[in-house]
Length: 210
Image (cartoon, rainbow, N blue to C red; front, side):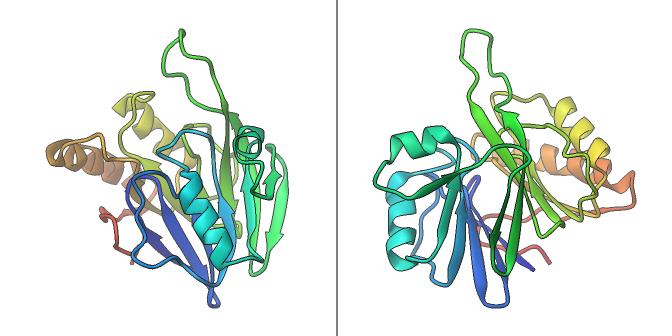
């Protein structure tokens, strides 16, 4: 399965000529709208993770694609045929199987209401938790790790990687960091994944996981 980072939280997974687009938010720009898309996964309603215009464009170019998200996504865009998922649900979008975890966005502050958030495991190998550091409790080959967020301390990020113990990691969700901050985060992720014998790839937007 080929994995390409887009800006911030956006990602593309590709297998056998088909694609899953994950969290195409307001920082994600497409030179050309992707085709051969089997599914679009939106982890939660924050605009850095989903932009209705992006999802509509993908849907128009890929009418058979299944759009998967939380109830809030379905409520916000009634013109889109959103399949609402909860933790424990699975969705088949050949050649991909999507399994959902978590349920709640990490707390930013007690004054800010919590919202729904689903993490996704694709084909039993690749995991991304959206805006949550809840450990999926399954073996993970490749983990997309949030590198910076208003809801996260670096120590929490490190503990998340240690707990998941994947074979490979790469950073996402890093636009609020400076270059220096991203270098610090990548160094810490690298250390954490090495503790279980894994490898970190400090890739930027537009690059693929080797």
